[in-house]
Image (tube, rainbow, N blue to C red):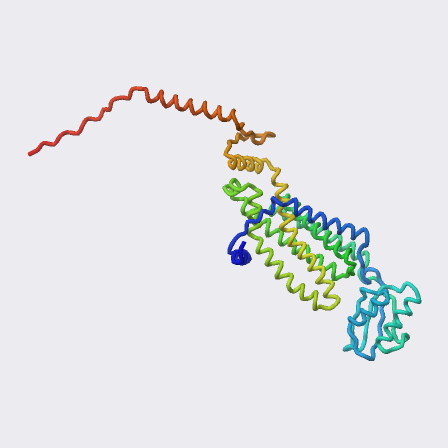
Length: 377
């Protein structure tokens, strides 16, 4: 593929010819390896929940010298309190910190002394109070119930709009995205905040949108009987994926560009949201093409209709003939080799004898009268 062809393909002027379904075992192996790593992260390290889920301490104090949130966070991290929430208030003259609860009085005194030295105040000037979790177990249970209801409604819609096998593929792709996103958070040790939960819910919508677009194209192409007979169901799925590939890639790039800018230039809260969005959008774009569509190919390929079509296509490519049966026996292929040659020779000899017999019969005389001669004057 030269540069001009690549540019034309990216712009949608040329349809690529990637064979996604033929390499589905490779895609499944890649996803399986990443999911295995994610599960190791879940059971080995677990998720690092923020103070919003566990509760902790809130520190408030004034500063004599201007400070940034990054400077305060660095001081907290150096004293054993990473992933704290730091807010600069009153035009840079006040600091509010939400951090995990202190394990001992010595740890408390050490952290307060470091913060007071950085701000140019006394440790007694720092106000401290214990706060509870803003995202409690009751909210988590309600969110989980709502998520289950939404996923069930989405599965029902896809089943009615397309078919139930497409709904299965879409749900498997969603579980794939959730496991990988959560596993990356567990492996990297990033703090899970309410913004992370919001980002993950947004990811589900994006992944479903991309999957529905692909399924709609597959449904449109499989309605053509001639196209399915010529390419088979697997070939039609590959054609559909190639037709919408650049659309999916460009949509994902448009979404990822602002996310990357937030990831590098946003504040601490925006970075948590952007990181979850970046992982989820990338995983969702991958699963729609390499997971949802190949799973649909596996499920539909077991249907009798498409097995018969695949058998006919295979015989056309090899130049043989197919005798299609109903019931358990899907397609019986006439034998090749000497037996096939003998049968073909006998059939040819029979046709030749029939032609010879028909030529030996006397032909009836024509009853047409010869044209009358013209008289010359």
